[in-house]
Amino acid sequence: MKTVYFDHAATTPVDPRVLEAMLPYFSELYGNPSELHRLGREARAAVEAARAQIATVLGAGEKEIVFTAGGTESDNLALFGSLARYRPGHLIVSAIEHPAVMEAARALNRAGWAVDFIPVDGDGIVDVDAYEQAFRDDTRLASIMSANNVVGSVQPVAELARIAHEKGALFHTDAVQAVGSVPVDVAELGVDLLSLSGHKLYGPKGIGALYVKRGTRLQPILHGGGHERRLRSGTENVPGIVGLGVAMTAAAEARISSARSEPTSTMSLNACPSRKSPTRTLASFPHSMRAASLPRRRARWSISPPIRPSRVSPAPPARSTSNIIGTSR
Image 1 (cartoon, rainbow, N blue to C red):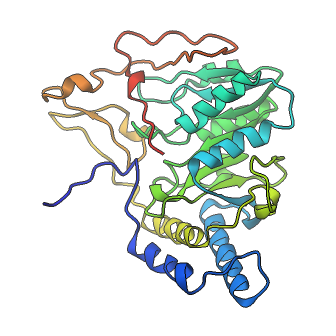
Image 2: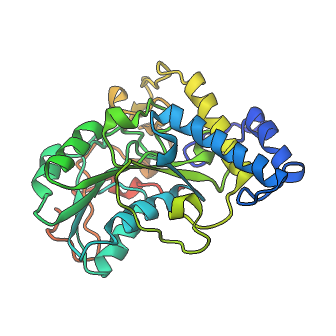
């Protein structure tokens, strides 16, 4: 039986070109990139070549790319690593962040940090006015995802980063659902930190990266041999890193910006087509037997987590779409 797969926001199959590039590093070129012998040097060369590929796609410097085990680790390194040098203050996240950011924010809240959760409109776009008004004198970081993993809404990241910098805060974006789907240039976006993951763009699972803008102070959350410029200890996953480099290059070359979903007479989109990722779609089918399980109208989203936010977000309106936030990573 042929399988029709509609869950690429959760994970993607590995591109054959990616798999072919990875295979030698499992059995032939298996050296530890920290070692000085030939196999170690070959592994190091492969790691640095992939780092250069990723930096090129993002418009970043090679030394600004830190390899991790995936999007969740990248998000945690961004939040905990950037805030570790401060006394507990204030941070801002959106109400529709992936749990990798949302749960990190809750953990920081338990450690004494005040957190504001910024609502979004019916298309899943952050309320920029509410976002700007949320900043305080002790706001250290704002973290807003680039593209949502359910409705595909693409945030105005460059504008949000500019506001954060004007307020004296760092800006992080979880771009796991954006990289490979929409153009991502860190210089144009003006972000300080950006997370990405391999398995969302036809690369392998278990590999990701964090862009760390030059000059951004970050403390490690894993301690050990001091790999990745002492920001992420642990022997590098050479096959995964090689695969991530190839996958990102292939995605940048193959991106089709015109491939956008359009509503039909029996389907309505739950985000404005011009404000969403071309590869992420959430649709409602009003006459379907399963219509009751899907959102029936657009609504303002907000979440009031059971923690101590610095100001309480409004309660979700009746039949809010806030219950459809996804958890796949």
